[in-house]
Length: 381
Image (cartoon, rainbow, N blue to C red; front, side):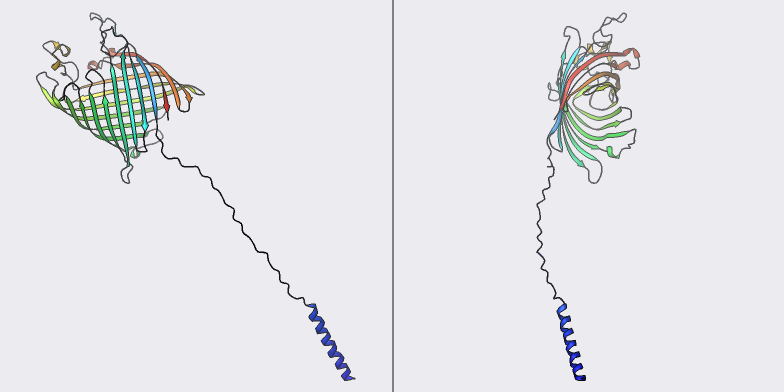
C-alpha cells in the first residue's frame, strides 16, 4: 500500500511538471520594418549682390543777373557811370555741372559756365566767354590704421575770358574729419589739409606763367536749426615767368606770397511742402573772399595824377593795398518739384547784397543790391 502511494505521488509530480512546462509560452520574435530616411532638397534663395555701377548727377541751370542798385544814377557832380559799383551787370549765365563716380575709387567733376551780355549798347565791362573746370579724384583710402583719408585731386580750368588763361593743379588731400569734435550741435563733415602744386599760363605769351606751391585748408560743418558753415584758406607761393609790377611802376617782382580766406554761412528755411512740391527760403553770406598779398597788388595806384587805367598797359598791375575783401548776402526763394525720384526741376528768385567797391569797404554807401533769378533741373543716375 505504501508503495502504491509513492507511485501515485510520483506520477502526480511528473504530471504537474509536464503541465507547468506547457503553460510557459515560447518567446515571440518581432521583426522591425526597416526605417527609410528620405532627404528632401532644400533650395535657399538669396539676393544677388550687385557689383559697383557708375553713378552721379547732371545739373543744368540758366541764371540771370540784373542791374546793380543805383548803377546808372547820377551822383551829385559826378556823371553817371555804368561801371561805378559793379562791372558785371545785366548778363546771363548757363551752367552745366555734374559728377560721375566712374569706379569705387575714381570720380570726375565738371562745371562749364557760358556768359552772355544782355545789354551790349551800354558801356559796361560784362563777363563773357566760357569758363570750363574739370576735377579728377582718386580715393586712396585710409592711411594705415588711422582715420585719415587720402584723396588725390587733379584740377584743370580755362577761365575763358579775354586773357583765356589756364591752370593745372595737383593736390594731396588729407581729410581729418573723423578726428574732429562732434556733438548734437556741430558736426564736422570735412576737414581737409591739401598740399598742392599748380601751374597757370596765358595763351598770349609762353613766358607768361605762374608756378605755385602751397597748402589749402577746406572745412565744412553741419550746425543746428538748418545752418551749415564753410571755412577755407588758400596759402600760395607764386613764382612768375615774367616780372610783375606791384606797388611801383619802377619796381618789378618775380615772386609773391598770397593768402585767400573764404568764410560762408548757409541756411535753408522750409516754407511749404505738399507732395512733390516744396518751397524754401535760402540764405547764404560771408567773406567771398578776403585776399592778402605780400606785395601791393590791390586797389588803384596812381602816378603823376594819372590813375592806373590811364597809364600804359605795362603799368596796369600797380596797386596800393596789400589786401581787399568782399562781403555778401544772397537771399532767394526757391521752388522744387520732384518729377520722378531721379528728376528734379527748380526755379528761384532773389537778390545779392554786396560791397562791390573793395577800396572803401567800411562805407555803407558802397553796398548795393543786384537782382538775380535762375531755373534748371537736376537728374541722378
